[in-house]
Image (cartoon, rainbow, N blue to C red):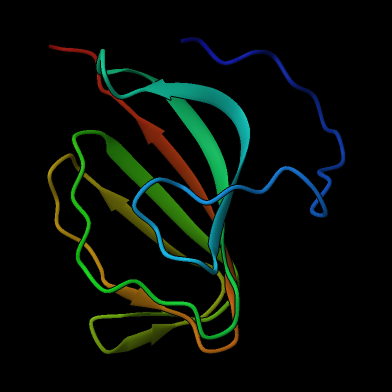
Length: 118
C-alpha cells in the first residue's frame, strides 16, 4: 500500500486510539498514515504508540518488518535503561526488542515497513 499525500493537519489526540494486537492494557496506537499488510508482507504505516503512566510489556517483541521509533514525550525504559524524549531507534526485521515500561507515560512516533527485495 502506498501512503496517501497528506499536508500538515492537526492530529486529534482525543480519539482514534486502539490497543494493538499483543499489547497489554495501557498501551494504545493511533494510525496516522498508511497500512501494513502483515499477511502479504507489504506496505508501511506510521503510528503514534502511547503508554499511560505505569504501563509495561512483559515479553520481548520480534516482527518481520523494519521499524523506526522516535520517543517524543515521556520516558521509556528498555533493558534497564530509561530513555528521555528525542531518542531514536531503527530496527531491522527479526530484531528482538523489549520488554518496555514507562513510569510517567510516553508517546512514540513509529514507522513500520517491508523492504523491497533486492
